[in-house]
Length: 297
Image 1: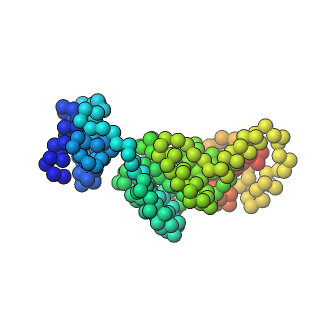
Image 2: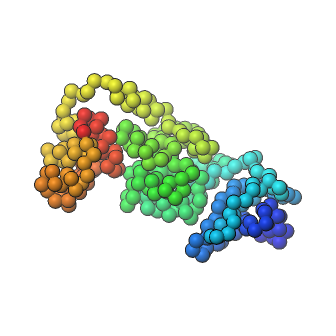
Image 3: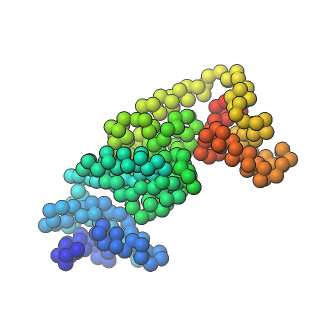
C-alpha cells in the first residue's frame, strides 16, 4: 500500500482506531498475537480514491473498540458488492463446475473450497467468506455439524445447504443448525445463484422443491396417524435397531437407552451408527425426525 493510500485509510477512522486494508489483512491474519482480532467493516470509498477499499479494524483487548461509522472521510460503497463464496463439497467435479460458473460473474468470487466439513470450518476462518455452499454428507465432519460449528463463531455468516437429499429430516436438521438456504444439487444454476445473492443480502431461501416439501410436512402434522407400523416404515433396520430408534425419538439419552435395554454404551453407539447409515441421515436430529414422521416416539 502506498503512503498516500495508507494515510487516506487511517484518516477515515477516529482517534485510536487502527484500520488496515484487505491486502494487509491477508498478510497479518495468521500471525496476530493471541487476543487480537480483526473486524470486517466492509467496503468503503475513500476520499480522492477511484476504487473501493475493503477495510478491517484491529481490535485489541482493553482498548476502545466501539467507534462511529466511517462516514467522515469515506462513503459506503454499494456500487458492486462482491460476494465472497466458499464451496464445501466432497465431489471435486461439482466444485469445479460451480467455480467455472461463478468465474464469469462480476459479483461472486470463489475464495475457497473444502472437500470435508472439518476443512470447511477452518477455511471459513482463513478465507472470510460471505456465503458458504455446504454439502450435507461429507467425510470427517458432516455438513450439519460443520454448519453448527461455523455459526458458533460466525453467527452472521450465510450458509446454504446444497445436497441430493430432499427428505424432510435433512431440511429441518439444516434449519435447526442455522442454515439460511437449502437447494438441491439438481436445481438450475440460476436458482443456486439467486439463493447465494439472497442469502448474502440477509434473506433466507429455500428452493421451490424444498418449499413444497415444507408445506406438505406442516400440513401432515394435523393428518391422521399413519397406519403402517415401524417395521413396515424401516424394513432395513433390525428389531433391536428399531427399539433404539424409538427410544431416541422419545428423547432418551444413550446412557438411559443402555440401561433400559441392558446393553453397553458401546453397543448403543454401534446401533446408532448403523441406524444413521441405513436411514442415510447425517445426525441424531435427522434420525429422530424420520422416526417421528413414521409414528415412533
